[in-house]
Length: 299
Image 1 (cartoon, rainbow, N blue to C red):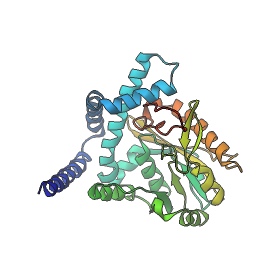
Image 2: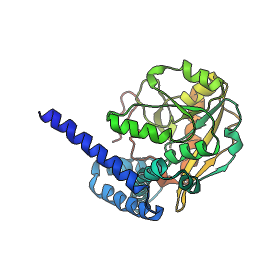
Image 3: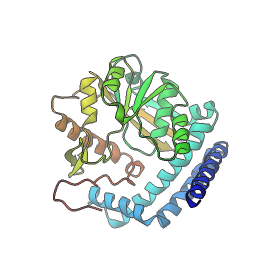
């Protein structure tokens, strides 16, 4: 009985949360952002374990900054994280014209048009869901990504519907392997790739990230090489009016024959991108959790 009650409670709370997001979508953006700012401060104050993760990340990556500066960045990170989460309400439920008005696609947009095999490097900035929407609305091109199922099936369905709302997005599971993804790439279906998290030691290589040996999957190099594809970075930025999604020019020296060197280049370029909006990166993740054998935990 307790297990059944737990499942029932989870179902009801999930349904209520989704209904809340659907209702939130109709509010003015300024109200949603204000609510997000308040939620961010609450999370900063109450979720001490995650706050310490962010603080550790900033200490490791920005040792040249003062403690006060890093504390301010930590606070801003929680605010941006919460605002971006609540922005999913209007990204996934508001009228299409509202989304088109709030998400502005800029930069080398022609890089993601046409039929050239393309790997879109989409780092974990908090606005990544706006990036999906921005490209899908402006360039209605069949594309693909790799998706990990959520344990809560209702949440899983909600996220999938949201991310597939605009355009044509095919989802591959990690169990599907490399072959169908490469085949889709070669057919001209862009691959959205988010390889900048710690996925554990399996298939990872240790390359520098802020001068620290960091477990990083070399999938960007691998898929670009196997798919004979160019790599185009996509950078979403929260703005008062919504989001600016910047398409950068394709990298002209990528991939090489050395996947480890390519992965180090990816991390170095990611550092440059983070420098333009340091509090909007996904610092709540334990990016340095996996350590080389024999090294102690950094957390």
